[in-house]
Length: 581
Picture 1 (spheres, helix red, strand yellow):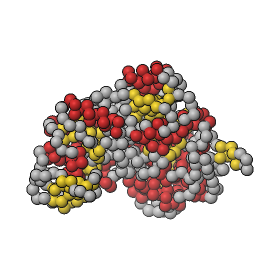
Picture 2 (tube, helix red, strand yellow; picture 1 turned 120 degrees about the vertical axis):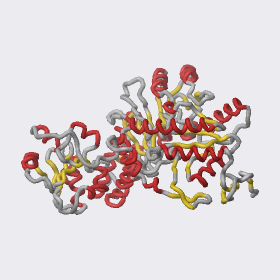
Picture 3 (cartoon, rainbow, N blue to C red; picture 1 turned 90 degrees about the vertical axis):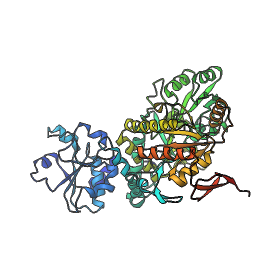
Picture 4 (spheres, rainbow, N blue to C red; picture 1 turned 180 degrees about the horizontal axis):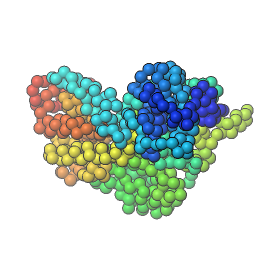
């Protein structure tokens, strides 16, 4: 049973318990001083106005923040939304939380508007993190900014986290939605008529729309399948495309996750990158002209240099030659606006993969967007519970996508957290997120260039890359640089080759050849996020300068890829001593 309870049934169930108030009665009410009016719509829905005096508290933040606006459990509360469905569900939640005088506005603001009742310019108090909030307020959503870690010779210091290209931390509202689900609504989906199963199904089904909105997708001809991470999403795409004739084209800048799943299923070709790390579109076109290509797999933004290939041109070239396009959006999902476009657009994206843990959500949930018809005609990715409509002794009838590829119980809580994180980003506005990262990246790149003695990889212009800076300090290994930044500056960065060995090999060799030096074994990567600010970038620059000037205070030893450090009380004259096994 896949849809035992529709949204209509859930609303009807809630209305059986929640009293409603008519728009006319609410408008006639003379005493509204003690009443709290809650607008549970999303931020973008409030642009056309709201009821006067309303508090904007989107449904996803209700449980976490209602106590900030409703003084006591017996305070009168009226909840409204667009048409009355969400407000009924939200009011039902409040009743279960112990609020005793809750009503839902019948027909929502649409009925209020049709009756010609007054509308104010917008909701009043405490919007969610968004365009009306400053970056300081967004920063306060993240507990990690108050995290202190030990540093050599100084006790503890506030952590500067600049490893967002690997994983991001979740804001309070996302953690609230995640833990609320686990604590109060934890149940399996699509397989039960009891209350918790219905609520879990409702939460899960809401996530499709939130993710579709974030990437500009429609869910009539397109579909979203949930996975454990981006790698699994890409592997699902490789599975879907495996039996189609032709080859897969990847690029030299891809993360291993957008290379190895295709390689193990059949012949692949690889588009070159330039010595500066940019995708060679001319070579891509040559490969498409000279071969039968079924799929072009390309990143939306490199996890090494932040380079953003021209996806529109890539898509047009691929479609002109009969190929589909898969975009690895792991890095881009939380950093820039994404629009897969309509399937009839010659520059549309056919498949798009992403995950929550690089988009301010807990670990364990990802997704693949793709053509519904194509994903419904292939065999299930993992056949099992939830994938079949009917099983007999000699046969099986599988469900269409997305359920066709949801073998077993999905990470429901992880999907809820991922969707809530994307809603958090949508409330801020992806254009604003992008501007924030470009501003910090300009400061970071400019400061590193001014220091001198630093080798930077990727384009010099911040607007041509995501919020990532990969570099080497001349004469100092990437391992030591990262260790000093961590142990003495309390700065979290990444070092190595970032699961992009082909790309790193080319970048490192090209720069070493141009400089006439040895090829480094890796590099250091600093990546900014929502809760970084100028002071974080300035601390990074301060400690990179100390590394350049050999002014670290500790003694460092390496054994394999593990570094140990101890306070020396002076500048170390031997920065690294190998220890034999």
